[in-house]
Length: 185
Image 1 (tube, rainbow, N blue to C red):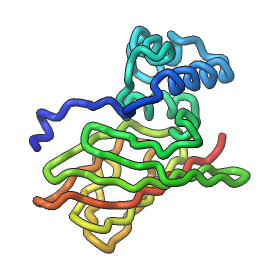
Image 2 (cartoon, rainbow, N blue to C red):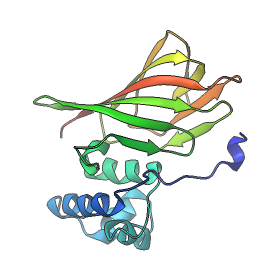
Image 3 (cartoon, one colour):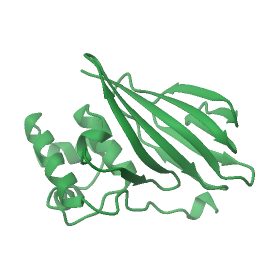
């Protein structure tokens, strides 16, 4: 797949109305107007309004931009009682578990990244880190300006409060686990 021709895919198969309702509730809890959140997240006001009203199916990149501005994990937008499949431009993940302690929330995902794909993800909120273990394939991942290379059986970690990339290397799909650590503000 030519990364120059990839287009963002809807992040969710179902549940967009519930996700939109959760975005609106979180936005209101934070005392942020729709216009202000759209501006801060770098998305159109009409796009955010459509998401909140359940008329649009967001991309993963859009959801991460919104949650970064709200300072919450992605899981805060998803239904707790279902296994959530989340799709980005290249990455497909299944949210396996959410762990919480007093000061940190962790999200554990199983990922598949097709051979020949690249995805650039927006920055998460301050202090967020990603921890990836590769089970098959070879992956370049981490900050856009300094990605790390890892193959089967290897583990990489990076701060993801900057734009970051996931890019397969070679002709094998990457299968991995991803643990995202979100410190609470």
